[in-house]
Amino acid sequence: MLQSLASNSCVRLIQNHKSTWYFVSLILGYLLYLIFGAVVFSSVELPYEDQLRQELRAVKKKFLSENECLSEEGLERFLKKALDASNYGVSILNNASANWNWDFTSSLFFASTVLSTTGYGHTAPLSDGGKAFCIIYSVIGIPFTLLFLTAVVQRIMVFSTRRPVTYIHTRWGLSKQLVAIVHATLLGMLAVSCFFLIPAAIFSALEENWNFLESFYFCFISLSTIGLGDYVPGEAADQKFRELYKVGITVYLILGLIVMLVVLETFCELQQLKQLRKMFYLKKEKPQDRLAILEHDHLTFTTVSDNTGGGKNEDKAKTFVSVPTLVSPNDDPMIQ
Image (spheres, rainbow, N blue to C red):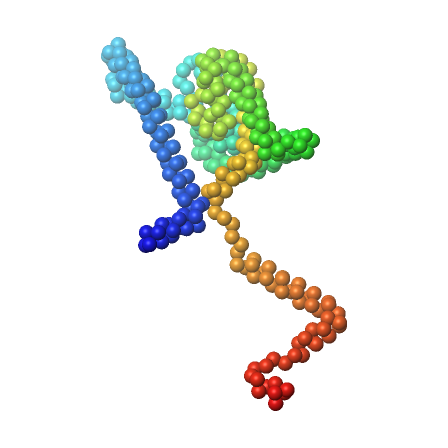
């Protein structure tokens, strides 16, 4: 009997806190997914890193052996200086000296990556004034960008999702959930084609050292606002129409980010995903002060309706109210 009571209490505890248990399972699943990604990345990339380290040591050793007048400490200082400059987007190579990182088009591209939180990291402010301005510019610009994107996406959603789904549902009498699923799938396929596959083919043709996979990788890393910065277009030494190319990439990033948000919002409005999200959310409870206000309004409404009932209602009420309340049988005048 004690076991049955304990099991029933456990079942009631789980049922009363479903969202909490779902939330705990979500946290555990996310942590496991992080660990899974770390294990895969480590097992795949660690051999390539080790091979690259060995090749660099061999090249460095060969260079020192061919130039005995150069000390290893001097070479280390030179390489450190060159690598630090490269981290700020300044290359020591002769064929890259013609490309400036802070002309107008490059600065426009940098501003777009900052405000969209993509942040490739291939170019960074060098001066203290530039770093301070970047902080102030980002503090104001990132919320402004979120407001801008929210307003644009909200208006696009009316014409791209809500009206077409409602029109097909009312015109042909199809299930609204089915129409929404098919519409979201077609919209996602169209977005992948126009902002991933086609641009990847264009980038692979314009960038000499990029294949299609690397170009597709750049598109995904950019439009998902990850922005690793290992692939940045328009940085080749002999890049033709570099200024126009940079402006085109800036427009592509902004439009692509808007389209990605529209697609994500379309999928989030699916009924199935709404039900899935509700599993992990806390139930909304009415605050006590709101309940008190509702009760007060109800009492006020009842009082007003009683006062506007007229004299007849009051007379009827008096005929019923005039009946005396008996406390004991001796109080009854008939018995007396």
